[in-house]
Length: 322
Image (tube, rainbow, N blue to C red; front, top):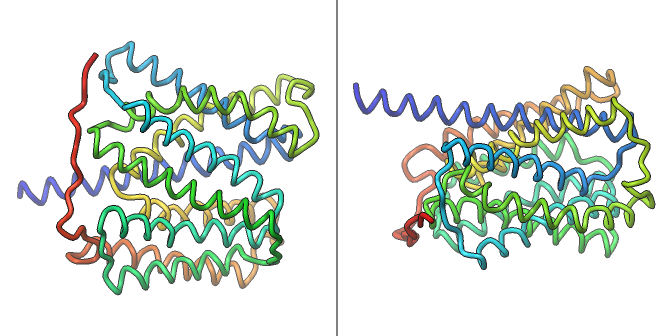
C-alpha cells in the first residue's frame, strides 16, 4: 500500500503543478490580450520586466517569512541563465513582429525537437519509438490548429532561430540548475527574477519603442489600464513559479509537449470570445490530433524505457547557506 500511496501522491502533485501552470498561463495571455488590444498597451518587453519585479517581491516576502531558505547560485551560471532568458523574450517579440503568424507558430513548434536534442546531447536521454512518434503527433496536431499563412524572410528567420534556441536553452537550464545545485523553484526564482527584472526594465522601453514607435512613459495610463497591468503582474507570478515547478519536476521536453494544451485552451476560449471565426473544422481536427498525441506522450514517456538516461549522472553541488 505504501508504494502505491506514494505514487498516487506524486501523480496528484504532478497534476496540480500542470493545472497551476495551465490556468496561470492561459490567464495571463487573456489579460495581456485585453490590455494590448483594448487599452493599447503594446509594450510587451517592459510588461515582462514588471512581471519579474512582482515575482522578485514575492520571493523576498517569502524569504523574510522564512518559507524560502538561503541558497547559492554561482554568478556565471546566473548570467548565462539571464542571457538565455532575455534573448528568449526579446527574440520571441521580434520574431512575432518580423514573421507571418504561420512561420511564428512553426518556430514555436520547433522548440520541441530542439529541446529533445539538448537532452540527448547533454543528458544522454534515450527516447523510445512510441515517445518519438507521440511527439510527432503533437507537432502535427498543433501545426494543423495554428499554422496558416507561411512566409519567410531573412531577418525574420534569424530572429526566430535566436528565439527558438534561447528559449530551449533557458528551459533546459531551469531543470539543469535545480538538479545541479539542489535548488527549489522558489530558490531559483529568487536568484534569477531580480536580474531579469533589472535587465528587462533597462532594455524593455528601448526595444518596445523600436518595435512600436511608442514610448512607454507617454502612454495614457488610467485606472482601468493600471488595474489590468497589476492583474497581469499578479497572475505572472504564478506563471513564472509554475514553469519552474513543472520543468523541475519533469523536463523541458515534457513541459513543451504537454504545454501545448495551453494553445488548445486559448483557441477554445478565442472561439467563445470572438465567435465561430476562431473555430473551424481544421482547427477542431488539429485539436483532436494534438490531445491524442499528448495522451500518448504521457503514457509512452512514463513507461519503462520510454524516456531514460543512459548511464549518465549529473554532479550535484550542495546548497550553501549564507
